Amino acid sequence: MTQDRPVVPWSSWLADAVLAGGPERALQLRTPASSRLTLSAWAALNSANGLWAVQDGDGGHFDGVTGLPLSWDEHLGFVRDWPDPRDERDRSVDDRVLRGPVPAFVEQPPTGTHLEVRLSTVHPAGVEPRLGLGAEILASCLSGPSPTAWGHHEPLTLAWDPAGMLASARHRAPERLSLHFAGPWELGHPYTGRIGLTWVDGVLSEEVTMVVGLEQGAEGVLSALDEAVETLGEAGVLDTLWVRRFNGRPDTTHAPVWRGLGSALGIAIGPRRVERVGIPATENGPLRGTPFGAPEHRSVWYPAPGDVDGPRQALRALRAQWEHLAPEKESRDRG
Image 1 (cartoon, rainbow, N blue to C red):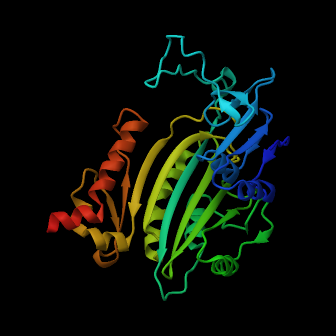
Image 2 (image 1 turned 90 degrees about the horizontal axis):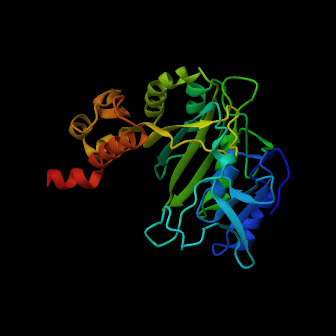
Image 3 (image 1 turned 180 degrees about the vertical axis):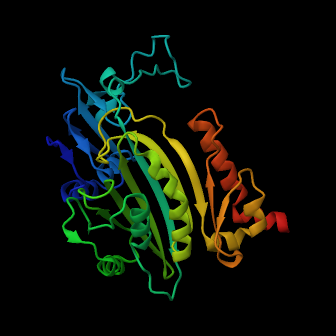
């Protein structure tokens, strides 16, 4: 599919193409180098069954997510271009020669920041779920204004309506449902997000992914992460939270340029998970956490250590803490 527009959203056309192709076929989107993708479109093309083919201006194409050159295959469409395996330079373990990203992908990185938060909430059976509350709290703490619009596709055409979103989820149950939301662009920091809803035995799981776009010098908003964790825990909508930061455009869109490896900023767990692993486990892990709330209703925020040498080390430190907090591990230790 070819799209020649400045910003490519997750439209009904793209969604229908994925549905028609089924799990065995990949979605391939071809755009000019000047095009950008919304969060939802970029996430779909960054998946195993997606490819963003970007025109390089000289008749060739490259992958808009990795920057690797692409070539055309009559049966598969665009494929990543592997040079002649007889070339001994940069040979990979499976005897292919890896070619690096094209210059256009790495020459002009974005100047802003994408703050990415991933919130997991489990709504117990027998309790009326309050969908979207987690997104509202994150928006309030990290941007200012609450979400104003939602929809099944982009552009978003429906006014923010948690009751309407819940009705839509119940209509689709037990199938997984993906929704999209955004805030007002003229207020606060721009943000956009996705909500994934899954029903299992009457229990609704809600996964919120939200990206806040920040200008250079606006990273002070990161200090509000503590407030976000505390408020989410008090509202009963925090199970787990992961926070990362990438280079990105302040308008939250994704351009076909290198955005860096990203930096893991921290993880948080809410009262139900704290109860499962036990307070001693939350206090005696590899990282020191910041607790919020009384012991019977505690949330804990674990910021990434500030003395690590790079993003990989920060991620390893957070993963070590996550493994320490695994309920299965705590059960074995107590046994």
